[in-house]
Length: 136
Image (cartoon, rainbow, N blue to C red; front, side, top):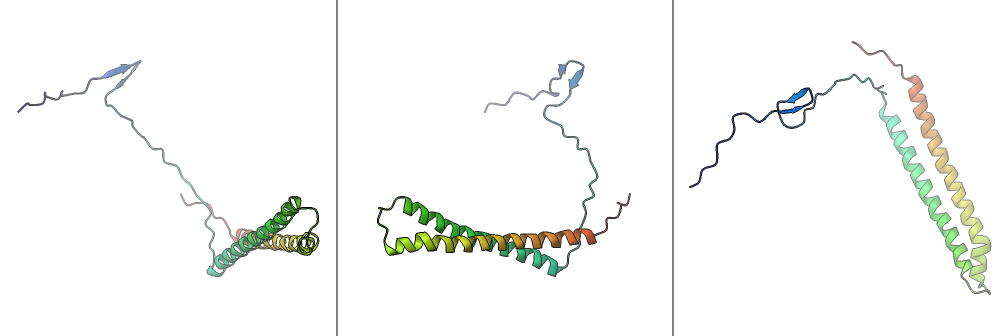
């Protein structure tokens, strides 16, 4: 059975300029800092209200996007349709696009109102919170 050659007692020292590297590898010397974030104390009902406003805004914006997509689909369909439109085509083009466009606009406004209401609640919480200096 062959034996491995003996390991050297000390690793070779490498000189780079003035500094001498005694060990191989990287060294990490952490510098610790202080951080004092503001803690907002929230009631469960406030958290539920903020979450509910986010959910409602998501619903309104996604439903509004659905209806505006219908409007664009009707317009693109009209662009590639043959010249005499059917009664359904005329109805969708001249009445359906306005109706779904107004619905989508109303849904976007409702979503914006939900976000505005949520942001005003968050600003009220920030105004009611007093910040104390950290204890050293």
